[in-house]
Amino acid sequence: MPKALRPLGGIPMLVHAVRALAASRVVDIVVVAAPEDSAESVAAMLAEQSFGAEVVVVTGGDTRQDSVARALLTLPDDVDVVLVHDAARPLVPVEVVTAVASAVRSGRPAVVPALPVVDTIKRVNASEDVQETIDRAPLRAIQTPQGFERQVLQRAHASADLDAIPATDDAGLVERLGIPVHVIPGHEEAFKVTRPFDVVMAEAVLARRRAAGAI
Image (tube, rainbow, N blue to C red; front, side):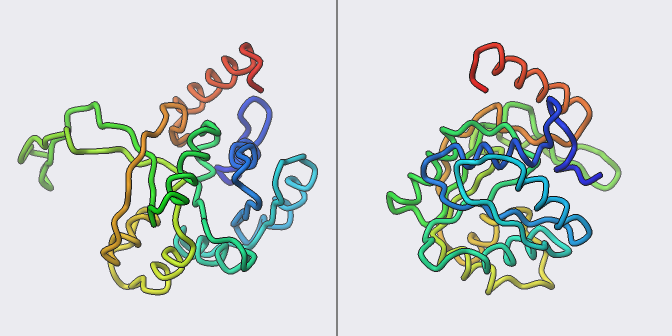
């Protein structure tokens, strides 16, 4: 099954991610880029849910970059701020979503939430021998949603060199244009769910939220 449809607390991760975005009053529409072979079933699943924003499902591309580009084409003309979110970060707090959008509204063309890197980072060679220890003070672990002025993000995708080393996030495409990307504080609960241990952590976060009456 697609990773985004794996259940957390009995609910698909994608539903949690859409709820997290829709819960912010600054979000009017959520566009979900789904794999071609599951787009119809994803649309049907989301149609059964109640969200605080309009939800549209489009067929994604072969890469993340292509999927975002296709989703951009679906947005209404009056949308001028775009948030790009990874469904694998289903528990991002609503305050992070709102803060990213607000930072773009305040005049930042590109904004990403991030946390300081706490582990010691070493650069190694092909033989796994340590070459150097990197100063972690200026390093940040980037999260989503990432926020952009729409015209900046569209320009970044239009200018992307498909033969170049692919960018791992949309901020990377914007950086290639020479446009500054502003960093704001992220949140520990906006972690990416990719490994079995991450699922355990996510279930723990959900259990704590339920106990606190937050969901």
